[in-house]
Image 1 (cartoon, rainbow, N blue to C red):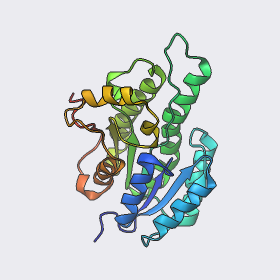
Image 2 (image 1 turned 90 degrees about the vertical axis):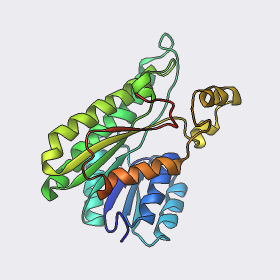
Image 3 (image 1 turned 30 degrees about the horizontal axis):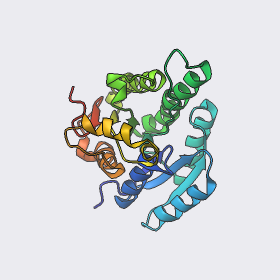
Image 4 (image 1 turned 60 degrees about the vertical axis):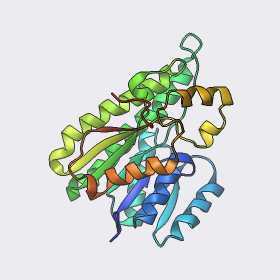
Length: 249
């Protein structure tokens, strides 16, 4: 039997990168997938077709998880279309990098709203059916930057550090109801986003990674699969770093 057979998962920001990798991995393991996107309807439709070809039900929802009402509506629509909800992958995120002395309020707010407030919004909405079922899994996407900080990313680092604290608090509040909450902190992962970096920046990252290579979206998806399945039934309130050894504490 597949690891996520007949489970229903929401994955935010799934039309590219890590989110898409998780969606594909989950579909291969039997999960029905509700995913969100913000702009490209054509990419969402392509992903629906690709996931459905794996024999599961897949549906894209245009939804801004940073908006509290939209997050509530998303969960209501998923329950209407899929009948249940078991797993939430809070993956949606943005960067608006810049040194603090030059960073404006809009850059700060947009990153904190998209990366952190969205996790609160969707967790708040999704915990209701999970509490009713006395079962649920949250996997929140953090970053190694959340633990170490990074010059030029004070907004991004703050949002990811907030995710880790929020994840651990939810684990303590909801664990007695058989609802688990964990986070993944990726390091340098080869995606469309990192593909836009210049070669010198990439070399700088690779020089501090003991494995001397970037990770793949599939390698992050493998950890998300572990955390979302019964293989990790006693793992709760943890942050798992997927970084090739870049960060070990």
